[in-house]
Length: 256
Ligand SMILES: [Mg+2]
Image (tube, rainbow, N blue to C red; front, side, top):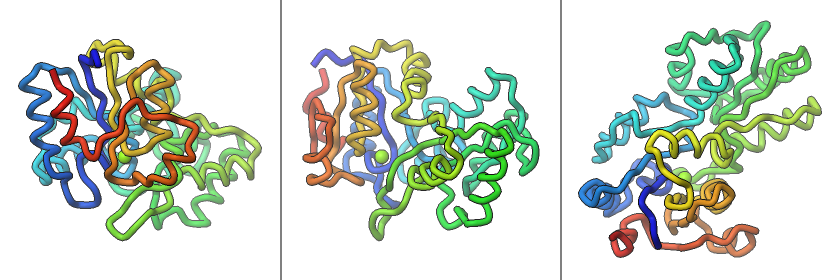
């Protein structure tokens, strides 16, 4: 394959739960040594970009935060472009810092957007109901991601998608997706490294979000058998990965 650049998913590819995937850090060193371009595209919405970088460094990955793309950055960029300044943020963790640091006001009144990410146990009835009322009052709905689930140490966990679907059902409006697999999100990272999609491979553990999203833009889609990978889900998916490898460490055999 004639690949010059890589987009790499984080959760389920570089690490699973709190454990780094064996050989992943070495593989990143090889990409660096061999002069490949690479960026990280994560659908993680629980941490601001700098916290994502810090956590990766604690797991032994030294990745400059400028190379990490998260849906909250895409949402902030979208609001900046549109001149919108107020949103109701339905997330958890410190991801709000990405918004506050960009001059966006977080409020539960008179907002331009309801922005939904993975709020874990904080996805309460009260907060969903507040979002419902804001949308019915005219706010738009931005979904940071709409994955069905993700893999935690103990098993699969509900992600943002099911809750976005609930609000869409209740309000009759359709959410705008800003994270993977939206083309604009992949393009942010591609443009940042000046890469052409047809010479770029995306590596992820989600056959729909990572592989399908990448293929839709003309990228090469590589599925790893780590993280949320389940053989039966891949067999029944409409997407066919261009390549499947046991883990990102196995990419070493395909580098120039
Ligand atoms: Mg993943």
